[in-house]
Amino acid sequence: MSIDNELKEKPTLSLALTKKIMAAAEAEAIKNSWPVVIAIVDDGGNLLCLQRLDEAQFGSVELAIRKAQSAVAFKRPTKYWEEMLVAGQQRVLSFPGVLPSEGGIPLTYQKKIIGAIGVSGVRASEDGQIARAGATILE
Image (cartoon, rainbow, N blue to C red):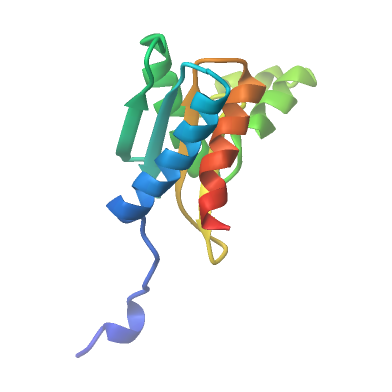
């Protein structure tokens, strides 16, 4: 009995592609002199790559990872949760795995989420700008 027709194929992030995404995000941070931490996770939220730029605060390491994990877990940018919180929806603080601060963006290819990028270290909007710069590699 063959199960070939029952298995699904899915695109995954290679190390080479992960490095390109990281390089694009890093270039945006360096261009603006922003000392940040950048994290890239796979579609299961597992860390693939992490960079802590010079002068980046160590507290941003965990935040960058959690932003990426939040973006992939809920299939939406973390800015979504930040906007809900700003609008008074305090309940988002009780959602497991949600980090309501801009800077986490799902990475998509052919309309499938293949991972996420998370950035932390400067203003949330600037974290988001850096994350978007990395994500544009897939466009």
